[in-house]
Length: 404
Image 1 (cartoon, rainbow, N blue to C red):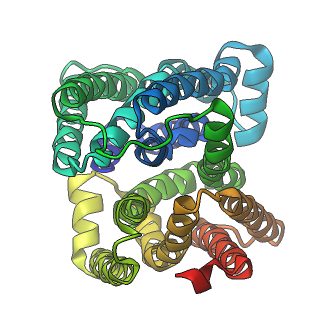
Image 2: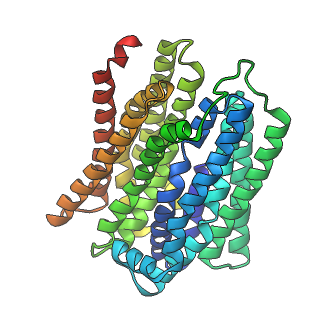
Image 3: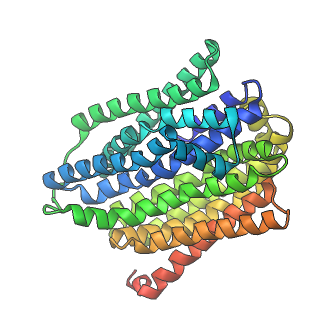
């Protein structure tokens, strides 16, 4: 799924004034993700709670209701004067740049409803352990994205239409195939659970995770808001967009360990820990390989088409981000344990402290005129480290560690 972002960045790099196009999409996509990110944990919620006919229906209605609520703020940002003023203030943008960001949001906001359904049905496939099918459908999503990007370049669409239509088309195709796959392959667990699930229980389980992921999405806008005020702000934001998206390829797979805890934690928790450690080491080595060898330059420059100052800054930033898999592994280990116990409030606390840490570090660096693409990456790492430390300490204090 994350490869689609690399193709998006590579497409934008081929437009005239590529730095500006990358920066505009960074502003718009990070704003949209503030609200879409709250849905990221829906597959885990569906996997864990939707284990009876009643729970299936309730979690589906819950997902639809949540997506409609989450669509309201970006709609206000995209279709109201105060919303435009807020975007202008946040990112220090105006004129054609602001208009482009608003237009992106108008295209992207309907995806929140589509993505809620995609996450729900993906969770059902994971629940019945059809993870190979999930991967296959994700490859179809990637193919549809690339096809639309190529069509946009071929027919000389504007950058906005090219990027937005590629996401909308791929998401709708992916959803339709998920629906077909669930109809043909999904079966309820033999031992049904949560037969009397209520909306209150679903909300109590969901809101800390939604806040966790929404505040994760807030990390980028905070960094971009400070970086955009630098003299070379457009180039810095473009470089951060490229390096952050590329780094996600290596640390985002570790987020899927939450599914493993839900499915297998009662069988052999030690084996899960060993497996997690091995995958983390493998991903860290691959990321270091990309950052320390000509492979990184090959990908950024020749495959994605990044050049000039943006290329230099992206390569430097990527090296620092190689610490992310280690930090994210520690965080996700304790996230998984808390989800299995259906005690997710600590996750929300950790995300709040992560956001505050990123803001504090960025503000300090900006105040002392030390903020650049490299120190912006350090601010992001500091935030994730604060979050990992928070969930670690909170878990230890509950005494749950001794029970495992």
